[in-house]
Image (cartoon, rainbow, N blue to C red):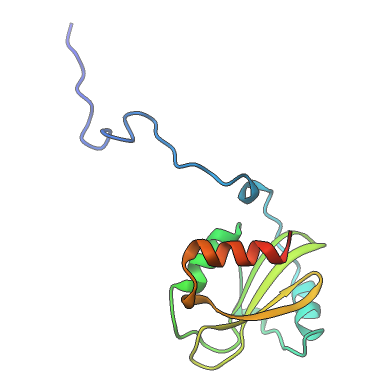
Length: 132
């Protein structure tokens, strides 16, 4: 009989079946908001919507991470997270070559944020605060 050594890929956290803690609020089912609702919500704030610039995210954390990846987004980029047709968050890049996002929810226009000026946790908390 012989003992099996763990493979190099399966040591440390993986060997213990370690999993990062998960925020329960991010585990709600992902709902892809229809482009008509995105367009209507933005139109209500006097903003246009180019469907080719719309990206959907399964949770606010991944949306915030993506927003913070660049200080220079092309104008009109749209980031969408939704729990349902009645609970959603849209962030639209409103200034050319910057990181200024208009935040729109199911309750209307909320704010303009400069995403990269926030730490990840701060941006996530701020965005979650708009749809609580």
